[in-house]
Image (cartoon, rainbow, N blue to C red; front, side, top):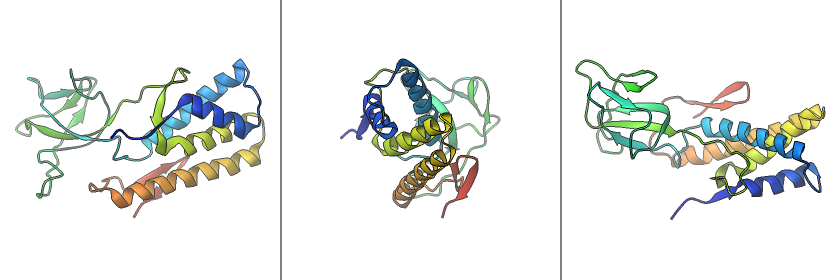
Length: 202
């Protein structure tokens, strides 16, 4: 069963209610879109979300490179780790050293394995304002409150904006803690990104 999603239209409706606006003007829609993309991008990168960050078997090419956009494969936006062993097997996976280049993930010498197990974050496609654009249900509350915080700040409501930012941050932390308890592969980066800070995760 596919994971639940929300649409950009649902975000706009919620943003409008939070802002207390009966009808968004064209300028307000542009601001709402900019806030949406900014905050979606932030929470997307804040944690190695298990429902978004798969481990995939990839084969290096003749130059010992796994390119960013292999034909028929997920486009890689960020490399989280590379292993020579399946991390879901009963053995402790052995990490493979690599370098990131404009072409992709570069391996060298004898440390080239086919397949290589790549833990990756797919490239995020920005919303252009299409109301049918979908994004994970888990991100909805954070994106709405964080975008409302941005809107308050842009209207010089600094204190209210800071309060809504704190609400959004707590929503994100709660989501991360929930998924951390379920996750089989523990993150090698034991931190959670927040705006301007990093918080230690257990």
